[in-house]
Every structure is written in C-alpha cells, then in structure tokens.
Image (cartoon, rainbow, N blue to C red):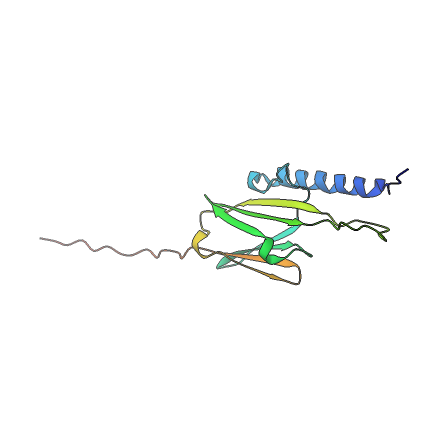
Length: 146
C-alpha cells in the first residue's frame, strides 16, 4: 500500500492566490497581464515606471536565468520558464514552493521601445528594463515668402 502526503492547506493557499491574481487583473482592466490557463504558477511581479524606462521585477528563485524565455511582440512582453520538481521527495515534510511552468504577459504602452529591452537576474529576481522612446521635440517650420 502506498501512502501519500496530503496537504489540504497548501491546495487552499494555491486556490486563494489564483483567485486574488484573477481579481487583480480584472480590477486593473489589463487583459495582457492575465495568467494563461496552461501555467502551473505565476511569479509575483512589481512594475515600476521611471522617467526614461519601465522596469519589471519578477521573483523567480531557483530558476536558471538561461532557462527563462522573454519575448516582445506587438507591444506585448511575455516571460516564460519552468521550475523543475525534485524527483527525490524523500525527507520532505512540507512542499510549498510552486513547481512547473509559468507564463506571464504584459501589454506595454506605445511609449515603450521594443528594440532596447534588456534583462538580468540577480539573487532570484529577474529585472527587465524597457526603455521609453525618445520624445520628439517640436520643431518650428519656417515659411518662405516670394
């Protein structure tokens, strides 16, 4: 007979987190930030707007930065990756950290410059910097006379 470790509270916590994320995305009206149903989990993010750039900070501890895929297409930034499950669960008394694939999407404003996006990872935090487009200065056009 095989015994399974049943953790009802962790399942309830996961469900609460998903409901909160869905409510936040609905309240913000941002369709681009909705979680895709195929994701097993979604890393929490902070989004900062600075004078010259937008910065997205995503918590992705335990994930190799080389295994994170970041794409920018048609004004939508997507982040995709996977935290692998430990095959050997011997000795585990509790497992709360989410495992599996994640996928996040963010709609960016027209002022974002998709050509100069950069990303780096430090201490388990993925930092994506999306510079803003240079503002075009109005110029005076002279009218020539006869």
